[in-house]
Image (cartoon, rainbow, N blue to C red; front, side, top):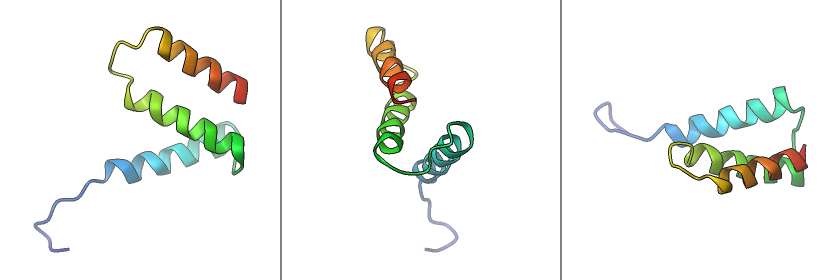
Length: 67
């Protein structure tokens, strides 16, 4: 890569942030619940700007069930 090339850092930054949140806040480091919660958090963050209504509430309930 040269100095004038652009690259997307958002996916990498989101991955790092999610790992920190899951480990520091929820004390989760690996496993099925870790992966499921990570997926749910990603989908909520990816769609947080759109009016989801019940979909957001459903995902929040799924996250609560995993915790």
